[in-house]
Amino acid sequence: MPQCDVAIVGAGAAGLSLAWRLLSPPAGVPAPSVTLVDAPPGSLRPPERTWCYWEEGPGEYDDLVTATWDHLQVRAADGPATLRSLGRLRYKMLRSTSFEEGLRPRLGALTRAEAVVEGIEDGHDGAALLCRTSGGATTSVRARWVFDSRPPAPAPARTALLQHFRGWFVRTRRPVFQPEVVELMDFRTPQPRRGLSFGYVLPTGPHEALVEYTEFGPAALTEHAYEAALRHYTQDVLRLGPHDVLARERGVIPLTDAHHSPRAGRHVFRIGAAGGAIRPSTGYAFSAIQRQTRAVAAAVHHGRTPVPPAAYAARHLAMDAILLRGLATGRVQGASFFSHLFRTVPAERLLRFLDGGTRPAEDVLIGLRTPVLPMLRSAVSLPFFARAPR
Image 1 (cartoon, one colour):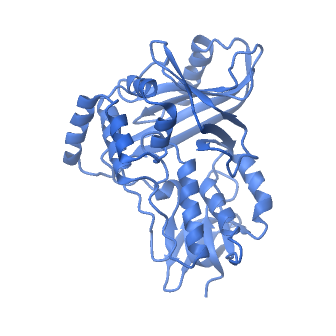
Image 2 (cartoon, rainbow, N blue to C red; image 1 turned 60 degrees about the horizontal axis):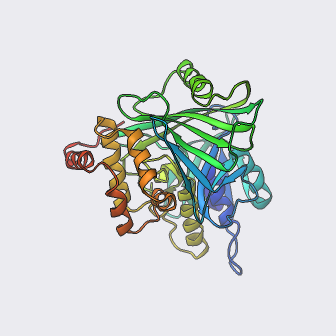
């Protein structure tokens, strides 16, 4: 017999979101018993990170966000800036520590365990997590349903790039930032031969911001290269003047056209990045994680098999696969591609597209704003590339 109704592996955005939603059922519906298994402090537990997303109107986590913005800016490589209102949307910044601390009071009924999950055995009436504690002891957790949110193993793909970045939380001596505007993509950075690079600025005040250097490419850089790129961007491009670096952030996000099956067994499912929540063309995932966990919790509450839904429509994934192939081959120049899109497509529509919320007719209009011939060449070549392990 299962020890609990639901076991969740990993306490990141997906794991914590699902736990909270499961323990907050509709009126008249009993909450399931939930056990969350997270790795002990160390290399298997991710460092503090920043999640950004956009939504219309008040949101479920508004009391936890660090900052919100109603305008964004994209700056082309030659300097011209496109400033866009987000209309009904708001761009939001949420720190992982704020998220974890803010959800803690809402998770009073949650059972937590610190252990490394070394295996998952699917059975007739549930599944078992085979775990090892930091002290070396082995233990198991049995559950009716298991949801695994650990980073996925690389899956076969035709195209595989990385979105890799380093960021500094800075405080300047003089007021240099516009607190109401996100610098979403600043392409005044040296562009790689294939892929793209850009600066990303999230201001939290006139003197404070998270400043990141980001690349889309086949491999991450050395630590020395990231530091040099950030120094160049902050000193020579932004001209911040004297400033202090208060904290650092790093990350690597896979951008691939691999298939991510949400089902790993009869009673075992994948959520979050492992369940395909990362948008291949941008690396954003937080909003998709919320949609995914909301649907899973509703299925558990109503006694249905809780298969996580696809995070994005097939047509959007197909468009992303074409773009990734264009970037990887050098047919599409990333800096000009995104600069042109944000200059010619209303920001609200474009962000809804990136979140998978546009209709087919809107997708066609956006597609016509891309470099049609290079994209067609990439689309035609895709079927000739086999999916290979990455």
